[in-house]
Amino acid sequence: MAQAEGSNKRQQVTRGVILKRLLAVGVAGLALYGLAPKLGEVLGAWPRLRDIQPGWFAVMAVSEGASLVCMCAVQRIASRERRWSPFLNSYLAGNAVSELVPGGAATSAALEYEMLVGEGVEPARAASGLTAGSVIVFATLLALNVLTLPLVAVGVSVPTSLLAAAWISVVLLLGIVLVGSLALRGDRFLTAVGNTAQWALNKLRRRSQPVRDLPARLLVQRDAVAQAVGSHWWQALLAAAGKWVFDFLTLVFALAAVGARPNVALVLVAYAAVSLLGQIPLTPGGLGVVEAGLTGALALIGVSGGAAVLATLAYRLFNYWLYLPAGLVGLILHRRSAHSPQPTPSE
Image (cartoon, rainbow, N blue to C red; front, side, top):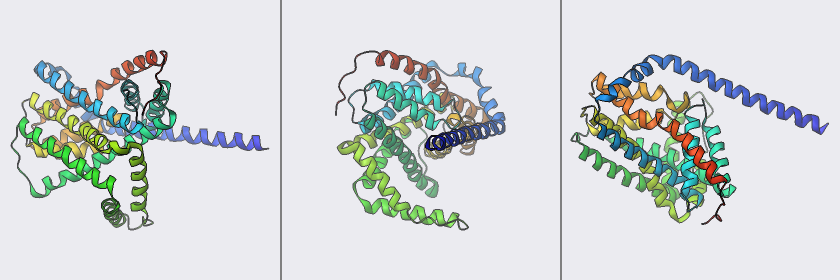
């Protein structure tokens, strides 16, 4: 009898998983169908990439590579590991999966966990590191959006140069680390943030059941993250900020490569908003969503249509397309490493 009940439960779970995956595929298909014209416009500019000087591709590769290293650093710090290769390999492969499979975040996380354990990372550390890393990076993106709000509110005019972008990036790094330290090292700041977010959420959802425990849930998640990163919290925050700042610089370099010189502060606002939009799992890796959002946002801040399309394509070449073959490289390196003797996990 118990075996039959267990079998029925497993069948229900399996059916639920299948239905969720089918729903994710259906939503992704509809979203891609609606976004196909804009995505086609961006991809149609592919031959125009030859108009970009090769040096700009090298600069964008370095910047996006630094963003990748920062992301892996967050996971490495949260897992309390010394080695880099397990996190580089697993992130490359897992990220490629998330950019190919609709709603692939869960599949990506499972693959990364399996690869980390296969390369000798303790299971508990791998699980807590991946979870804490995701929370830190997403919270950093939220902080980035909040920090850009004053630029919209007061209409700050920033010189449109790469030097200005560099200064803005430094200020962002410091600002995100400051906000993160306030959240990690005390309850008062995070409680105030939770109360504010809860009030706004309840105002927007007046006909729904009011949310009452958001501050408490934020504190619980904060405690889990703080326990994972330990005394290395500031390195984790700096790396998480670097993940977004270097990716932002890739977009700035792409705009410079096509001869566009928009207000850098407004580019930051557009980047922050579109990056947050790209986290919504409508399509794999935000495919189509980011292209449509970014070309539209760049056009709104004064970038001509042709330049906006080409800059978006150059940016997404490094932010999306090159990650796909890189995932295969990560998988090959992982298999070689998994078959070699593994060192004892270290603190």
